[in-house]
Image 1 (cartoon, rainbow over the protein chains, first blue to last red):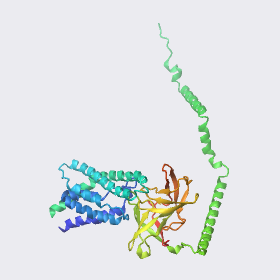
Image 2: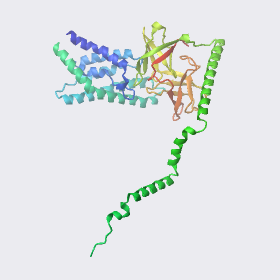
Image 3: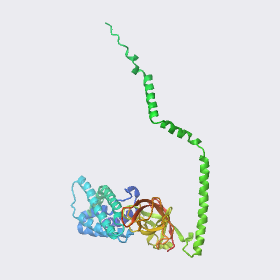
Amino acid sequence: MNKFFFKKWSIFIFVPIIFLWHPNWLGFLGVQPYWPLFWLLPWSMINGSINGIIFGLFLGLILDSLTIDNNFTQIPGLILCGFLFGRIKLQSDILVEHFRYGLICCFGSFLCGMLYFLQILFKNFSDSFFLLFIPSFQNILAEVFLTGFFAPLICSQLLRMFRVSRKKV
Amino acid sequence: MLDIRRISTSRWWHKKKNWITFGFFLFLVFVRISKGSIYKDFYYFISKPFWPGQSQKEVILQSINQESLINLNLLKKDNNRLRQILSLQNISDNDKISAAVISRKTGSWWRQIILNKGSKDGVEIGSTVIGPGGLLGRVKNTSLFTSSVTLLTSPESKVGVWVDRIQINGLLVGIGDDYPSLILYSKDADIKVGDFVSSSPASTLLPPNIPIGVVQSVDDSLKANKKVKISLLAKPHVIDWVQILKVKI
């Protein structure tokens, strides 16, 4: 029981640390994978949509506290992803499952990126509207690519870990 | 009848010497067509150590550097003296806090750095942060031991800047990539690639005359204003040590 809760709450330490650490050697065009999705996906798949929404909200709150942009938030994207990921059924075929993680995380990253971009666009609608498009899409695409690239590796391990912990409880 | 065909080894194309001669001929044709460029380039490299004035040039450049350094120091002193006379803000070494970068997010949406000095060390919200090269950003919030800096490249950053050559103010806006945009609210501004941009003397957020960057490209396509891409002098993705200016405007 204690071990399960440790693993559950350790996410709230590990995700912020890796978000702040920002290892450049893992990046592409200066962009990092969208780390919270790697934890959100297996957690929501095992525990369902409601848990996914709560987990997404918590992650969003933590990540918002680490960024200094007060006007924009990551919470809507993560909540939406938590809800959608919770509705996905687990597959028995391991190979198919691996590719699914990649595609699902790509979609989730795109969703979160677009929601964040729309907030920036809405805030800067008057003065620098046109300037934002190209760099923003570059950021979103780089993030989608990296998230999809790392997802099969990380998500499958975390899913296995969460499953084992849950069974033991 | 006896066959009187010549022995094959006696044919001209079987002789190596002939082929070498033919190859040399082709080389000379190439040299002729290229107007001797191979020779000239070869000569360029072998004669390089003997060119006149090499050592003299280095001595002169060194002298110019020394002269510029002395001039800079004299001007700094003069500037400080005049600022004191006019009772303007003056930044001394005591007003600077050196800090190390402990977290760096210079890609994607979040463009910020976290420094290892916080409110305990006297860092205040709104303080200016400079690095080797010039301005990096402003302190957005502080904790007891750390302070978070919004970089000039962040979509949240908007600061007033000054283009010295054409004596005009503009607004530097971060757009989420490594090159922030300068918006000049005058279509007639004669800004050119290579123009130097510094913090505006009229800015209420930054101290004046801090180097920021140089103009990289100019976009004239908009009707009401000019949009200019700026290449920053201080590169946030490589800087490890910065200075926080305590002075508030």
